[in-house]
Length: 230
Ligand SMILES: Nc1ncnc2c1ncn2[C@@H]1O[C@H](COP(=O)(O)OP(=O)(O)OP(=O)(O)O)[C@@H](O)[C@H]1O
Ligand SMILES: [Mg+2]
Image (cartoon, rainbow, N blue to C red):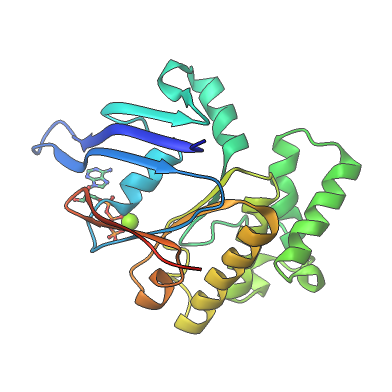
């Protein structure tokens, strides 16, 4: 079964003044369980737009998005937000951690929003931090951590809600290349361990080639969809 299915999803941005920009042409896509997918392609190709469509961050201009075969067009704003929280974990380019909270609290925050009770919360936060190798640094605030460590906190925060899919828009862009490659290797290990699907975007060939499936975009279209061994 597809976790996420896009049927003829198209996205046009218009600000009402300049002429509208079609960021994503009508696109069909199936993302299945356990996939490790990279969106590649030049700047402006539509990678962020496609990730935002997959993650239901934004509504398409036309076409349908199905999450576990449920058509999201039939959902109200509140229901969609609930499904989005359950289905997706997000990792951002700029880490997006809350500066006044330590690593533990940044991860715990997700579960507080979901009203997970204290004992289970403690256990899940500790497990998530251990799986990204940060148990020792859980009392540090983001400003006391390196970029790579901050992005591992963000990865723990993305997986702690046990999402179906982790979505990451250029998660390595603010890391040096070695740290960036290590982050993707961590994603791959988490995918194996948790059976979670990952979809991330990147410009970096060393990051892109670590994926098992590479979607290359250009001018708002998926030009190639390659599946690699391993
Ligand atoms: N909010 C917006 N309003 C207007 N145009 C937008 C908006 N977001 C994106 N676009 C346009 O849509 C196209 C696709 O943008 P998108 O951000 O998806 O590309 P990208 O592949 O993620 O690029 P990058 O590698 O630079 O992040 C571009 O032409 C961009 O200028
Ligand atoms: Mg982008």
